Length: 521
Image 1 (cartoon, helix red, strand yellow):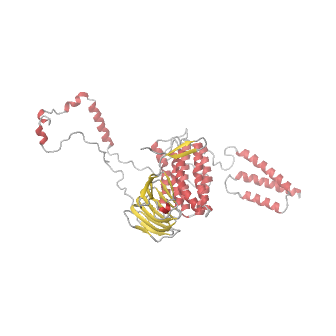
Image 2 (image 1 turned 60 degrees about the vertical axis):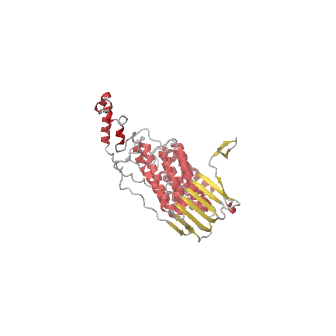
Image 3 (image 1 turned 135 degrees about the horizontal axis):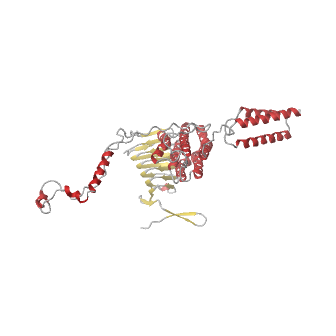
């Protein structure tokens, strides 16, 4: 019996040794590893080993692992050596891809729909960034025009991500798409010297407006949505830490090797990662120079004339007294305008069109429709009689890109959002949630009933008319200007009060204290 146990122990140690030699860290379980686990489980279930036997077996396995780890410290001695020759900051970026990014992709697939498609686009952008990091780790910094060509795949993918949001404004997960779309420009940190880290934080803050809305909507309803927010924001948090450690003042380039070019060869991606996107298309043909050779010749001729000194006046014609207007007033009465000074400067008109075939995008159709529980009012221009009357408590209204229009919403509704509107007038009865005004200009909002909260964000010019029953409304503003709140009086008129825009912050020894600054005059 004892000899049988010893034989099984030796077999297991050999098996584990084989597993460690053929299995890479982070890879899928090897069949030998599965066999070891099954053998141990069988031994325990049949009472083959006691607790003392198991302790001795574990001790032997630990010693085997320690010996193998010592051997694997040499380059190329363990696994497939895929990290050999890869810069440390590229490996750190791979860790970010395998950690927060992988978690974000996983949860996005569980959420599904537009969120999953958006996540796949984000992943492509991150892989494009990894490809650039590999180039930077093996090449010296190129000239600005060559660098812009290397950045092209990243910038194009950022545009793809943002366009997806614009094409899916009716999505039920629009807040998710907006959070990603507002923050995805953070991938451009590679071009933001000398402060790439603060740039990523600024882009992350732009997403917080929408992620807070997601948390507010799903906090006690769907934990998966909350996990999605945490996973997505952790990407940018970890990226800031990564930049601080490896690229504090800008993208770190190699001190040796050739100067990077657009066609720099990219090594293969790490095991399990998606392949990098194809190289950027060939650069477009240079724009017409509009006879730059002629300009150079003209400039040379000008300097040649100046270098003649006094001889430059030899070609001028003599003007006699009878040709001078101040000595011959009759010349003033002759027809035609008389120039009294040099011609005023005017901006030169372009002599050639680099892309004459380029046309403006077609105008989006105007909408006023109910989609599920969302009222969509979009692309309305010069419409002064827009009315939504058949409303329910669970419905929301989303007003996008409306100009010189007036909208009235009757009844009680859950929430209203004004996005990218100009010179819009909104009148509504009751809102049980929030009225949000985002990225708008010169809008007027009038409350006829009650509303608990009005949020104004990135808006210039906003007048809010409160009713007597909505005087307890909270008004939250950020990055906005020219805001006024009008309070009703007993006579039926309104008294206007400006919302402060300038603040003073001081340190009181324990914390920062911010107060409104009163501007004299």
